[in-house]
Length: 146
Image 1: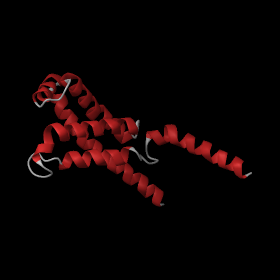
Image 2: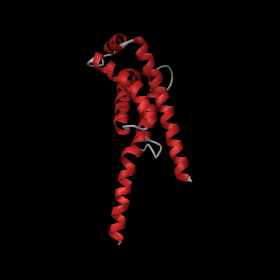
Image 3: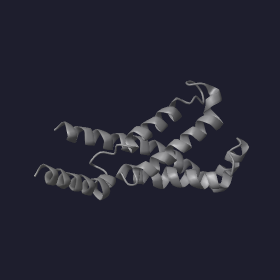
Image 4: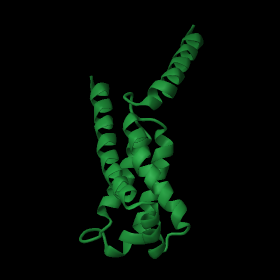
């Protein structure tokens, strides 16, 4: 019973984090790669066009994958890189709270890290990769105890 509750909680957490990333990605998408790259260039992010494309794809398509629980470690790595970049280049100088503070960036990055490294059984990663591994380990244990 508790495992099911935990899996649902992990799914709801992934949905919550992904919705916020998705919304920010759509803002960048609506602005366009050029405008996003221009903003990135203005604040000193290296390779601004590449960074803009990376962030837009990550925040839009990566968020869909994050909800589905697909390639979670890879999406998590992207989210963490995204949030470290936002903290260092934009929000860090504003302090933790207040206008432009880094509290949201910090929470999103750490929540993505926690949820992305343990997606639970309600994830495509579990269905595609972990379930087979667990079955293989269980059969190995049965063989060893026999």
